[in-house]
Length: 100
Image 1 (tube, rainbow, N blue to C red):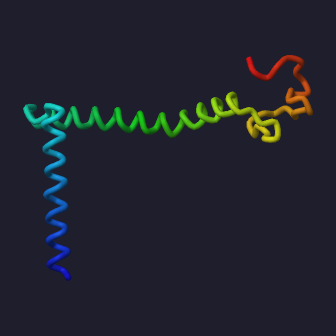
Image 2 (spheres, helix red, strand yellow; image 1 turned 180 degrees about the vertical axis):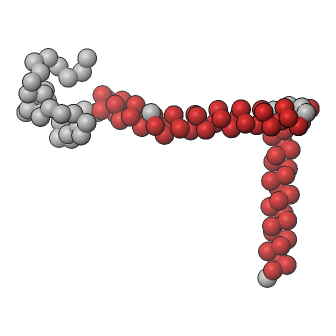
Image 3 (cartoon, helix red, strand yellow; image 1 turned 60 degrees about the horizontal axis):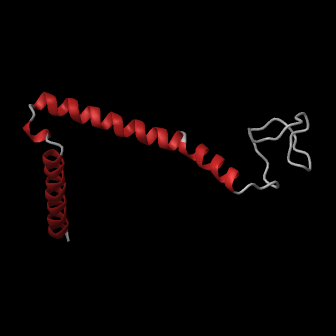
């Protein structure tokens, strides 16, 4: 059992090295000096992490807003709103429409 596991682990390591080599060749990092590789990898990692953070932090709110605009539901209360909704869908203290 352990020789098979060691062989699978070696294959996995070889595959990850192959993927990293493809990444270096496709991004032209392979021709850079080692300090430039570190700088570019950190820069790319920062961009990816900022994009992931922004997509998890802001995109769900935008999607909910678009969903509510496209398919309004009067039975669902907005938990962030401080006003109480009346039967017409307006806040009790507002006279205009909710959508601006």
